[in-house]
Amino acid sequence: MGSNSGYGTAFKSLGSNLFTNSKTTTTVVIGLTAIGISLLLVTGGLRRYTVFITRPPRITSISQDENLAFAREINEQISSHPLVQQLRNDKGYEENRVYPWLREETRKYNLTAGTLLGKGRLSVPPVVFFSKEKMELLAFLHLGRDLCGHDGIVHGGLLSTIMDEMFARTVNPYFPHENGATAYLHVNFRTPCATNQIVKCQCKVTKLEGRKGFVEGKMMIFDKELLILDANALFLSVEKLEALKS
Image 1 (tube, one colour):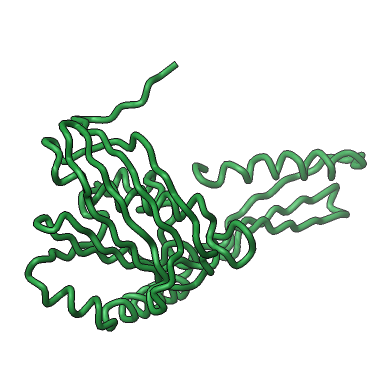
Image 2 (cartoon, rainbow, N blue to C red):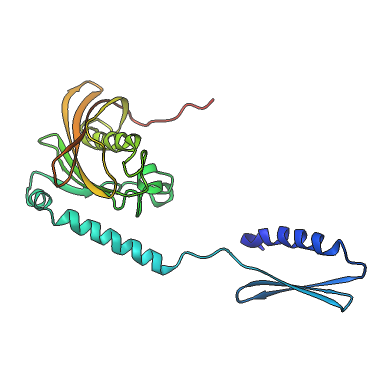
């Protein structure tokens, strides 16, 4: 039955258990019902069993609507902030969302654009402003409740991942193929980052040297300008990055 292949195993298991003590011929009748599958066993006309095996619950449109409403709320919080409005009015900065280049078929395999994107995690795609002239990038993103290391505190590894990604977006436009790979990433954690809040990343290219691009930056709590971490990294220009296979 395709996706209902598990039902066959259930039938076999149920049948094995119910038939063990039966001394007469057993007839099995299987029928599809509105709530699942009805299994009717008739033993010698004297015993009858009806077993309902229900399908797994489906994702409802209500939960999807709730996610969309939450995403709209977070987007509004970011968009209404004076700094974001100022950057939108500054012709020296270009605004974009982080993942426009990802094809739909590969997006689901991407850590930050697929696996971690959604309510409770990276609630919305980061809002990013980039100035090629200033060699600078600012990004705003919401960190949800499900990203903890210590309870209520965002995992430091995730914060490092976010900075690595923002650094790459800052320096890659200056490489011949607009693609780079991280050679090293140094992160200094200054303040524990609580979940369920918006943070700001500020990144800047400090030096370009051949295939090398040096970047530094910081992450702050959005409204309080409280420093969460500062970091620096070295990226190497690559045409295409491929994994080595054993």
